[in-house]
Length: 252
Ligand code: G
Ligand code: G
Ligand code: NA
Ligand code: MN
Image (cartoon, rainbow, N blue to C red; front, side, top):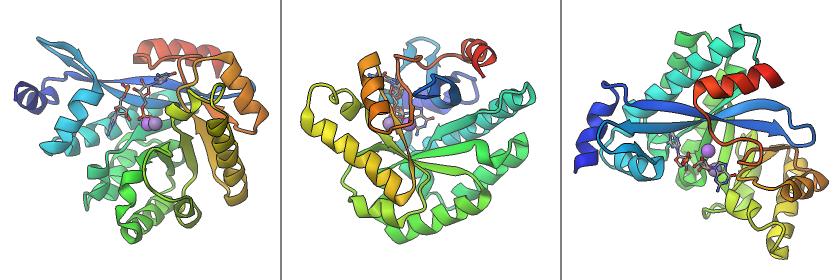
Protein backbone atom coordinates (compact mmCIF):
# COMPACT_ATOMS: atom_id res chain seq x y z
CA UNK A 1 0.00 0.00 0.00
CA UNK A 2 2.83 2.35 0.88
CA UNK A 3 4.63 1.60 -2.39
CA UNK A 4 1.38 2.05 -4.31
CA UNK A 5 0.86 5.55 -2.98
CA UNK A 6 4.55 6.31 -3.36
CA UNK A 7 4.51 5.29 -7.01
CA UNK A 8 1.75 7.74 -7.76
CA UNK A 9 3.97 10.54 -6.46
CA UNK A 10 7.25 9.23 -7.82
CA UNK A 11 6.85 10.74 -11.28
CA UNK A 12 5.89 14.27 -10.22
CA UNK A 13 8.48 14.24 -7.44
CA UNK A 14 11.19 13.22 -9.92
CA UNK A 15 12.16 10.14 -7.91
CA UNK A 16 12.60 8.01 -11.03
CA UNK A 17 15.91 7.78 -12.82
CA UNK A 18 17.27 5.80 -15.75
CA UNK A 19 20.49 3.85 -15.59
CA UNK A 20 22.09 2.56 -18.77
CA UNK A 21 23.81 -0.76 -19.36
CA UNK A 22 26.25 -0.89 -22.30
CA UNK A 23 25.58 -3.41 -25.09
CA UNK A 24 28.73 -4.53 -26.86
CA UNK A 25 29.98 -6.23 -30.00
CA UNK A 26 31.35 -9.41 -28.41
CA UNK A 27 34.48 -9.91 -30.51
CA UNK A 28 35.74 -6.35 -30.06
CA UNK A 29 34.10 -5.10 -26.87
CA UNK A 30 32.93 -1.96 -28.73
CA UNK A 31 29.82 -0.39 -27.27
CA UNK A 32 27.09 -0.08 -29.90
CA UNK A 33 24.17 0.74 -27.62
CA UNK A 34 22.71 0.83 -24.13
CA UNK A 35 19.65 -0.59 -22.39
CA UNK A 36 17.74 1.87 -20.22
CA UNK A 37 16.83 0.40 -16.82
CA UNK A 38 14.50 2.20 -14.46
CA UNK A 39 15.52 3.08 -10.90
CA UNK A 40 13.28 4.43 -8.12
CA UNK A 41 14.91 6.47 -5.38
CA UNK A 42 12.24 6.41 -2.68
CA UNK A 43 12.59 9.39 -0.29
CA UNK A 44 12.34 7.20 2.84
CA UNK A 45 12.97 3.63 1.71
CA UNK A 46 15.92 4.35 -0.56
CA UNK A 47 16.48 2.54 -3.85
CA UNK A 48 13.66 0.11 -4.63
CA UNK A 49 14.44 -2.58 -7.25
CA UNK A 50 12.30 -2.62 -10.41
CA UNK A 51 11.45 -6.27 -9.82
CA UNK A 52 9.54 -5.00 -6.77
CA UNK A 53 7.86 -1.88 -8.05
CA UNK A 54 7.21 -2.64 -11.73
CA UNK A 55 4.68 -5.41 -10.94
CA UNK A 56 2.91 -2.96 -8.61
CA UNK A 57 3.01 -0.20 -11.24
CA UNK A 58 1.47 -2.67 -13.70
CA UNK A 59 -1.28 -3.64 -11.26
CA UNK A 60 -2.33 -0.06 -10.51
CA UNK A 61 -1.95 1.17 -14.08
CA UNK A 62 0.91 3.54 -13.24
CA UNK A 63 3.12 1.66 -15.72
CA UNK A 64 1.38 3.62 -18.49
CA UNK A 65 2.50 7.13 -17.42
CA UNK A 66 5.79 5.78 -16.03
CA UNK A 67 6.51 3.88 -19.25
CA UNK A 68 5.73 7.01 -21.26
CA UNK A 69 8.22 8.96 -19.12
CA UNK A 70 10.87 6.24 -19.60
CA UNK A 71 10.45 6.38 -23.39
CA UNK A 72 10.62 10.17 -23.49
CA UNK A 73 13.58 10.39 -21.14
CA UNK A 74 15.51 7.68 -23.01
CA UNK A 75 14.89 9.40 -26.36
CA UNK A 76 15.98 12.79 -25.01
CA UNK A 77 19.16 11.23 -23.60
CA UNK A 78 19.90 9.46 -26.87
CA UNK A 79 19.50 12.73 -28.78
CA UNK A 80 21.93 14.44 -26.38
CA UNK A 81 24.46 11.69 -27.13
CA UNK A 82 23.78 11.85 -30.87
CA UNK A 83 24.57 15.56 -30.76
CA UNK A 84 27.86 14.79 -28.98
CA UNK A 85 28.72 12.41 -31.82
CA UNK A 86 27.86 9.29 -29.80
CA UNK A 87 25.61 7.48 -32.24
CA UNK A 88 24.39 4.44 -30.35
CA UNK A 89 21.26 2.35 -29.96
CA UNK A 90 18.90 3.07 -27.08
CA UNK A 91 16.88 0.07 -25.93
CA UNK A 92 13.85 0.53 -23.70
CA UNK A 93 11.87 -2.17 -21.87
CA UNK A 94 8.17 -2.19 -22.67
CA UNK A 95 5.72 -3.82 -20.28
CA UNK A 96 3.05 -5.96 -21.97
CA UNK A 97 0.48 -3.58 -20.42
CA UNK A 98 2.03 -0.68 -22.32
CA UNK A 99 2.10 -2.76 -25.47
CA UNK A 100 -1.63 -3.44 -25.09
CA UNK A 101 -2.40 0.28 -24.65
CA UNK A 102 -4.22 1.37 -27.82
CA UNK A 103 -2.13 4.58 -27.89
CA UNK A 104 1.21 2.81 -27.57
CA UNK A 105 2.47 3.43 -31.10
CA UNK A 106 1.39 7.09 -30.88
CA UNK A 107 3.38 7.45 -27.66
CA UNK A 108 6.46 6.08 -29.38
CA UNK A 109 6.00 8.56 -32.22
CA UNK A 110 5.52 11.43 -29.76
CA UNK A 111 8.70 10.53 -27.84
CA UNK A 112 10.65 10.42 -31.10
CA UNK A 113 9.22 13.68 -32.42
CA UNK A 114 9.66 15.56 -29.14
CA UNK A 115 13.31 14.50 -28.81
CA UNK A 116 14.18 14.65 -32.52
CA UNK A 117 15.96 11.33 -32.02
CA UNK A 118 16.38 9.32 -35.26
CA UNK A 119 13.94 6.35 -35.01
CA UNK A 120 16.45 3.76 -36.21
CA UNK A 121 18.41 4.11 -32.96
CA UNK A 122 15.43 3.22 -30.77
CA UNK A 123 14.97 -0.44 -29.77
CA UNK A 124 11.89 -1.67 -27.92
CA UNK A 125 12.32 -4.76 -25.74
CA UNK A 126 9.11 -6.72 -25.40
CA UNK A 127 8.65 -10.10 -23.76
CA UNK A 128 6.99 -13.23 -25.06
CA UNK A 129 3.94 -12.44 -22.93
CA UNK A 130 2.75 -9.93 -25.56
CA UNK A 131 2.25 -12.83 -27.94
CA UNK A 132 -1.01 -13.98 -26.44
CA UNK A 133 -2.86 -12.18 -29.20
CA UNK A 134 -0.69 -12.95 -32.16
CA UNK A 135 -2.72 -11.11 -34.80
CA UNK A 136 -2.77 -7.89 -32.84
CA UNK A 137 0.92 -8.24 -31.99
CA UNK A 138 1.68 -8.69 -35.68
CA UNK A 139 -0.25 -5.52 -36.56
CA UNK A 140 1.49 -3.42 -33.88
CA UNK A 141 4.92 -4.72 -34.89
CA UNK A 142 4.23 -3.78 -38.51
CA UNK A 143 3.24 -0.27 -37.38
CA UNK A 144 6.45 0.02 -35.34
CA UNK A 145 8.47 -1.16 -38.30
CA UNK A 146 6.89 1.60 -40.39
CA UNK A 147 7.92 4.12 -37.74
CA UNK A 148 11.48 2.83 -38.18
CA UNK A 149 12.23 1.56 -34.67
CA UNK A 150 13.75 -1.86 -33.88
CA UNK A 151 11.98 -4.54 -31.87
CA UNK A 152 13.65 -7.12 -29.63
CA UNK A 153 12.18 -10.14 -27.88
CA UNK A 154 13.50 -10.01 -24.32
CA UNK A 155 14.13 -12.95 -21.99
CA UNK A 156 13.64 -15.32 -24.90
CA UNK A 157 13.07 -18.91 -23.91
CA UNK A 158 11.60 -18.18 -20.49
CA UNK A 159 8.00 -17.90 -21.72
CA UNK A 160 5.82 -20.30 -23.61
CA UNK A 161 5.92 -18.98 -27.16
CA UNK A 162 6.98 -21.45 -29.82
CA UNK A 163 9.93 -20.98 -32.09
CA UNK A 164 7.59 -20.60 -35.06
CA UNK A 165 6.41 -17.29 -33.64
CA UNK A 166 9.83 -15.82 -34.42
CA UNK A 167 9.48 -16.91 -38.00
CA UNK A 168 6.16 -15.12 -38.42
CA UNK A 169 6.72 -11.86 -36.59
CA UNK A 170 8.78 -8.91 -37.86
CA UNK A 171 11.40 -9.10 -35.10
CA UNK A 172 14.87 -7.55 -35.46
CA UNK A 173 16.52 -9.02 -32.42
CA UNK A 174 16.22 -11.79 -29.86
CA UNK A 175 17.79 -11.54 -26.41
CA UNK A 176 19.06 -14.82 -24.99
CA UNK A 177 17.93 -14.78 -21.39
CA UNK A 178 20.58 -14.56 -18.70
CA UNK A 179 19.39 -17.82 -17.14
CA UNK A 180 20.68 -19.60 -20.28
CA UNK A 181 23.92 -17.63 -20.49
CA UNK A 182 24.50 -18.49 -16.84
CA UNK A 183 24.53 -22.20 -17.76
CA UNK A 184 26.28 -22.34 -21.13
CA UNK A 185 29.57 -23.51 -19.65
CA UNK A 186 28.13 -26.06 -17.23
CA UNK A 187 25.04 -27.52 -18.87
CA UNK A 188 25.49 -29.13 -22.28
CA UNK A 189 21.73 -29.05 -23.01
CA UNK A 190 21.69 -25.30 -22.46
CA UNK A 191 24.80 -24.95 -24.62
CA UNK A 192 23.07 -26.81 -27.50
CA UNK A 193 19.95 -24.72 -27.05
CA UNK A 194 21.93 -21.50 -27.35
CA UNK A 195 23.71 -22.82 -30.46
CA UNK A 196 20.32 -23.67 -31.97
CA UNK A 197 19.02 -20.18 -31.25
CA UNK A 198 22.03 -18.61 -32.99
CA UNK A 199 21.49 -20.84 -36.04
CA UNK A 200 17.82 -19.94 -36.14
CA UNK A 201 18.78 -16.30 -36.05
CA UNK A 202 20.98 -16.81 -39.08
CA UNK A 203 18.28 -18.74 -40.93
CA UNK A 204 15.36 -16.42 -40.34
CA UNK A 205 17.37 -13.24 -40.10
CA UNK A 206 17.36 -11.76 -36.65
CA UNK A 207 20.34 -10.77 -34.50
CA UNK A 208 21.00 -12.30 -31.11
CA UNK A 209 22.07 -10.48 -27.97
CA UNK A 210 23.23 -12.58 -25.04
CA UNK A 211 22.43 -11.02 -21.67
CA UNK A 212 23.85 -11.55 -18.22
CA UNK A 213 27.41 -12.25 -19.40
CA UNK A 214 29.67 -12.36 -16.35
CA UNK A 215 32.78 -14.27 -17.49
CA UNK A 216 35.37 -14.22 -20.26
CA UNK A 217 34.72 -17.93 -20.97
CA UNK A 218 31.07 -17.17 -21.68
CA UNK A 219 32.16 -14.51 -24.18
CA UNK A 220 34.47 -17.03 -25.85
CA UNK A 221 31.70 -19.64 -26.11
CA UNK A 222 29.25 -17.13 -27.57
CA UNK A 223 31.71 -15.68 -30.10
CA UNK A 224 32.79 -19.20 -31.05
CA UNK A 225 29.19 -20.11 -31.77
CA UNK A 226 28.34 -17.07 -33.82
CA UNK A 227 26.56 -14.82 -31.30
CA UNK A 228 27.67 -11.28 -32.14
CA UNK A 229 26.25 -9.08 -29.40
CA UNK A 230 25.98 -9.13 -25.63
CA UNK A 231 25.71 -7.31 -22.35
CA UNK A 232 26.39 -8.13 -18.73
CA UNK A 233 28.44 -7.31 -15.65
CA UNK A 234 31.56 -8.67 -17.41
CA UNK A 235 31.43 -5.57 -19.62
CA UNK A 236 29.57 -3.15 -17.38
CA UNK A 237 26.67 -3.02 -14.92
CA UNK A 238 23.85 -0.53 -15.55
CA UNK A 239 25.31 2.92 -14.75
CA UNK A 240 23.95 6.41 -14.06
CA UNK A 241 24.09 8.78 -17.00
CA UNK A 242 27.33 10.58 -16.06
CA UNK A 243 29.25 7.33 -15.60
CA UNK A 244 28.02 5.67 -18.77
CA UNK A 245 28.78 8.87 -20.67
CA UNK A 246 32.44 8.71 -19.64
CA UNK A 247 32.58 5.15 -20.97
CA UNK A 248 30.90 6.14 -24.21
CA UNK A 249 33.16 9.11 -24.83
CA UNK A 250 36.15 6.83 -24.35
CA UNK A 251 34.93 3.94 -26.48
CA UNK A 252 32.69 5.01 -29.30
O1 G B 1 17.70 -3.52 -13.68
P1 G B 1 17.24 -4.69 -13.28
O2 G B 1 17.84 -3.79 -13.37
O3 G B 1 17.14 -4.96 -11.82
O4 G B 1 15.73 -4.77 -13.87
C1 G B 1 14.90 -5.74 -13.36
C2 G B 1 13.70 -5.96 -14.24
O5 G B 1 12.97 -4.74 -14.40
C3 G B 1 14.05 -6.43 -15.64
O6 G B 1 13.14 -7.48 -15.96
C4 G B 1 13.77 -5.25 -16.50
O7 G B 1 13.33 -5.64 -17.78
C5 G B 1 12.69 -4.52 -15.74
N1 G B 1 12.74 -3.11 -16.06
C6 G B 1 13.76 -2.24 -15.82
N2 G B 1 13.46 -1.02 -16.30
C7 G B 1 12.24 -1.12 -16.86
C8 G B 1 11.39 -0.19 -17.54
O8 G B 1 11.71 0.96 -17.77
N3 G B 1 10.16 -0.66 -17.95
C9 G B 1 9.77 -1.95 -17.75
N4 G B 1 8.56 -2.29 -18.18
N5 G B 1 10.56 -2.84 -17.14
C10 G B 1 11.78 -2.44 -16.70
O1 G C 1 14.47 -8.58 -17.97
P1 G C 1 15.64 -7.81 -18.46
O2 G C 1 16.45 -8.63 -19.39
O3 G C 1 15.34 -6.47 -19.00
O4 G C 1 16.52 -7.61 -17.16
C1 G C 1 17.78 -7.08 -17.14
C2 G C 1 18.22 -7.32 -15.72
O5 G C 1 19.46 -8.05 -15.70
C3 G C 1 18.45 -6.07 -14.94
O6 G C 1 18.05 -6.34 -13.65
C4 G C 1 19.96 -5.92 -14.99
O7 G C 1 20.45 -5.13 -13.94
C5 G C 1 20.37 -7.38 -14.86
N1 G C 1 21.70 -7.71 -15.33
C6 G C 1 22.43 -7.10 -16.27
N2 G C 1 23.64 -7.71 -16.46
C7 G C 1 23.64 -8.75 -15.61
C8 G C 1 24.60 -9.77 -15.33
O8 G C 1 25.69 -9.86 -15.91
N3 G C 1 24.24 -10.70 -14.40
C9 G C 1 23.05 -10.67 -13.75
N4 G C 1 22.80 -11.61 -12.84
N5 G C 1 22.12 -9.71 -13.99
C10 G C 1 22.42 -8.76 -14.91
NA1 NA D 1 15.38 -5.90 -21.17
MN1 MN E 1 16.07 -9.79 -20.54
